[in-house]
Every structure is written in structure tokens, then in C-alpha cells.
Length: 402
Image 1 (cartoon, rainbow, N blue to C red):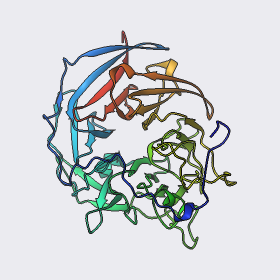
Image 2: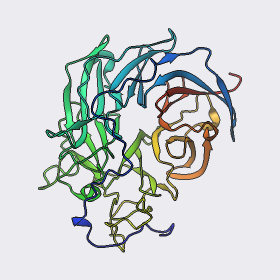
Image 3: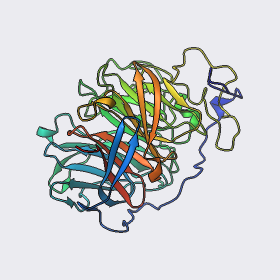
Image 4: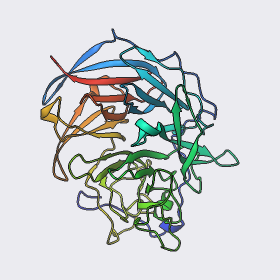
């Protein structure tokens, strides 16, 4: 395996389906009570952090969130935060309050990496009050699950009625690799990033929704200009395929192209541009190895022609999660930088870009030792982070001396 090409071994990839849920912890199917109710603490510690671009402060806004996964900013200044065990909360930083769990969510497959995942507001939220959410839904036996995207109207402290937008079929996960990120583009179409369910070969199968990036109308209808519309044996929802486990997605602020990143196995985390109809290679080509150190069994000895190469990749996996471009209104030196959370790397990755090239990387917050699950730029131009812990936090990164 070299920097020049993605690596490989063994020709029998079509027959190999990796269903093992290695490293998956079972939490059961019922929501688990957090250790304490989440709280906003105006007196919480503010920690200085030195960056190559100056000194910053990390402000702990909320504590006691159980494995928070995603956040969204409401038009009235409040926030929604999802907790993986199946809870959605409203946070009012000005009032110093965290709501009880919002009612109306469906029963979820809360096991391993499964539960309530990404959330996104409808582009017309001010009028329709629709919240979109990705979650793991069990099959009829209850032993496997896939990612479902639903939407529901937020009305006070409840959601309803819940309407399905798309379901990952078949459901192959025992508790890992659900994805999932939700992004609306400028035309109001919804991109849905789905993991491979640890069924690696299925990422290449166009009749499966494992390891795929989907493009849909907000109600789940299929745009007629999707690349596989009318192709026999292919799901028309698919925009691109050959993905392993997408955990971050964001529109580039200038080009408006969707950027995504995904977990590799042992090494090979990568950043991609969402190419219409593109095959991004997994598991035929990868810069990573199996967790055992052995070659990925489905990878080919020679990379097939026509695969979309990653824009950037890491030899050692930081376990990337969450993605946000910085507008630079508050920190001009960070304008256009890409910020990515690191779970295994326990920190915040700052990438400087030259067009579509990564030209410099800085690791921030590593001294805190916290798994960063989500990264968002708020309406105030500041970066907000979620830590994926039993006692998870909502953090804000501020320049010192504001």
C-alpha cells in the first residue's frame, strides 16, 4: 500500500459480505436514562487553546447529554440536539434551559452505533416546522437494522405525525455503520448518506442502499435527473456509491458542491466530492487494512478504471465525524477552512484548502481528550461542537478577547 494508489488483494469480492459487528457494544433496544439531566451552566469552565492562528477559548455550554450526535439551529435562536439513545432536546442558551425529551419519536434500534443520528431542518422550516431525522430501524425479527430517514412537524414539545422519507433496504446491520448525514442543497433537494452496515460488498451493489449517497425530493420522491433513473437493477435514489461509512457532509460555501468524508477501516479515512453516478471504490480499493492488520478481502490487486479517488485521505484513521466550512466572519484567518471532528483522534481537525486540495492540517483540542462527534458553524459565526460521551457536552469555540 502506497501513497500513490489504493490497495488491494483477492478477486472474490462479489461473494464476500462482511456482516461481523466487531467492536460493537450492545445497549439493548430501549432508551437508557442518562446519568443526570442535561444542564446549561453559565459558570462552566472556559479553557484557552492555542492555535496557529491565535488563542481561542473553549466554552462548555451544556453538560449531561448522553452520546449527543447532531445539532441544528432553530430560527428563534434555540438549538435542537439529538442523543443517540433516542432523545431529541431543545436547548435555550439565553434562558439557560434544556428541555425534557421531545415526544413523538419512533421506537429505535438502540444498539452499538445505532439510535437517533443526524437531524436537519426543512429549508422551509419557518413555515412548515418540519424536522428531518436519521435513525436506525429494526427489521421484523428485531435482530438487524438499517437507516431510516423520517420527517415530522415540531409543535411545541412534540413531533408528529412521523412520515418516512426513505428506508435503507435490506437492513443488514447488527449495530454498526449506519452513516448517516443529511444535507439540503440550494435547490431544496435532500442528500442522505448511508453506511454499508458492515456488509462491505453491498456498497457496490446498485440494488442495495448500503454504502450509498442518495438524492431525494424532501418528501422522498426521486428526482428524474438522478444518475440511475431508468437503469434496470439499480435503485433510482442513488447519487453515488462505493462508500463505507459517511459521517460528515457539507456544501462548499463557494462552489456549492457537496463534500463528504467517511471512515476507512484501519487507516484510509477519506474526504470525497459527491460525484454524480460516481463509484468511490469501497471495498474494491482502499488506503486501509482490516482491523486485524490483514488486507481488505474484497480489494482488488489492481484498482479498476473509473473509480473516483478521494480528495484527501489519512494513513492513520482519526475516525472523522461532523464537517463544517468556516465562513470567517468572526475569525478571518479561518475563512474557508474545513473543520472536522475526530472520534478516535479525540480532537478537532482544521484543514486549510487551496481549491480542492488540502494544503495544511492542524489538530486542535487534543489535550481535552474528547471524542468530537459533530461540528457546526452557528448563525453567530462561531463553531459549535458535540462530544460523544456518556456525559456529552455542547462546546463553543471563541476567539480570546472578543
